[in-house]
Length: 214
Ligand code: DX5
Ligand code: ZN
Image (tube, rainbow, N blue to C red):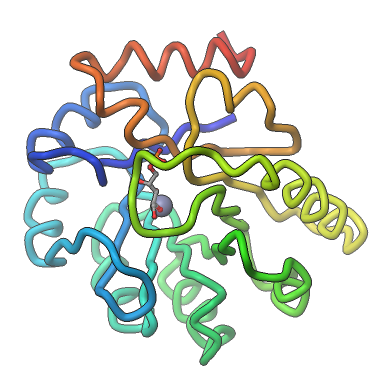
């Protein structure tokens, strides 16, 4: 199981990103909101670009915006491993997935807790990853929604039935207890559990230990 660390709850994002870069997290998770789809903390892409120029970690980008296209190009120029956007955008989903792939970057669809899982089905053979939101998108520090467990199971079943290799990532409320409940998951996104502590490496070690990786 891979760990993508989110800096969304860091007071000082420059410092936060620097500290996350010094850990052995597999990826830095970049949460981007612009107020069009979900409310939340906004960052300027220019500022992020400036900071990430000095970071060697690969980025796991999560776009919670109505028009992902605008940001796909910008993030494709950084050290980006994958770009995931919310399925709730509805328009141009296929085109945007193709655009991400055209840059040689993995693509994913994120799904909010209230969205029907069957909405993912038409895109299954076009994506590398599904990001299951285990909180309402917008803010870090929320409690893990228990119903996510059965949603993950249903998504896993759907992928198996289609005989495809689509990875499952889970985002929201991940800590050393909730991570133990996860099955069929290839990656977790963890924010406040890591960045609320002084030393960022220790909680990452705890997550790996709880997931049976260490
Ligand atoms: C929320 C973001 C999450 C958030 C997770 O919309 O997508 O990535 O940073 O934060 P925690 O781990 O604190 O729930
Ligand atoms: Zn996220």
